[in-house]
Amino acid sequence: MSGLRVGVDIGGTKTEAVVLGTSGEILAERRVPTGFGAPAVVATAVLAIGDVLAASGHTLAEVESIGVGIPGAVDSVAGRVSHALNLGVDSLDLGAELARALEVPVRVENDVNAAALGAFHLLELPQASSMGYLNLGTGLAAGLVLGGQLWRGSRGAAGEIGHILVDPNGPLDLDGQPGGLEVMASGSGIARQWGTGESNSVTAVLDAADTGNDRALEIRRRLFDSVATSIRILVLTVDVDLVVIGGGISRLGPRLLGGVDDIFAGWAANSPFIQSLELPSRVRLLPEGSPVAALGAAYLGGR
Image (cartoon, rainbow, N blue to C red):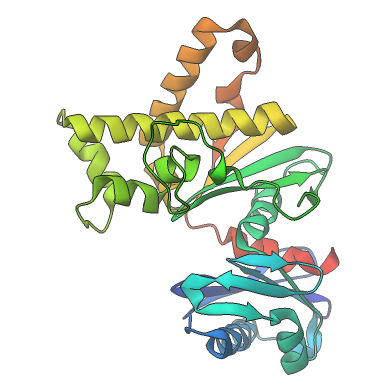
C-alpha cells in the first residue's frame, strides 16, 4: 500500500499520531509524551511517527505526506511555529526540520485548525457545507471549514474569538482585558476565577453551583452565556451550517448543552430573528475520544 498519510497532534503533555489509509480509514493510532523545548518537540514528533507506522505495519517509504497540528502562532506556508510557550518553543521551523529528518513533505497548522478539519472529516459532512469547530479546552478558539477547506483569514487570525470582549465588567484575562470569551468559558479561565487549585475546576464549579454557591452560580452563568455567545458569533458572522464543540469542556455533554440551550431559549423568546436562526439544531458535540487534531493534520498533506 502506498499513498499513506500521517497526522500528528503535538500537545502540551502528549503527542498523538495516526496513519490514514488511501480511503481515509485510520490504520493505527499512538500516543507518546511530549518533550519540552524545540529539539525535544522535533524528536517527539519523529518518535510518534515511527511508533504509529510500526503499529500499522508500514514504513516511511509508503507515506505520501505528513501533517502536524501544534499550538502557538503558526505560519502554515513556511511551516514555522512561534510562541508555543507550553512547549518551551519560542521559534521553530518545524516543517523544514521534520521534512529534512524524514524525507517526506510536511505541512504544519495550528492545532485548533487541524482539529476543525479533522472534525469535518470525522462527521463526514457534505463537501459543500460549512462548519465552525469551537474548542473549549485550556483556551477558547474556533476553526472554520468552508466548502471542505480551512479558512484562516488574511493573517491567520480567523476563529480567534476567545479575544472578543463581551463583558466590560467581567474578569480579567491574561492579556489584561476584561470579559473576554476565553476567560469566561475556558478551562484556564474558569480555574483562575474559581481559584481553589482543584484539578478539574469546571466540574467543581458546576457541582458547587448545584448546591447554591453564589460565586459558583455566577461563574456557571458566565460559562453557559459565553459558550452560547461563541456559537451565536460563529453563526452570525459566517453563517456556518454547523458548530461542533470539542475540547475538554465538551465532555460535560448534556450538562453543558442544557445550560447553553437555556440561554438560546431566552434569546429566542425576545427576538424572532434569533429564533429564526434555530441555534440549538446547529450545534453538535464532538464524539468523545476522537483524535480529531491528528486526523485533521493527516488531511493537511493534500492542501
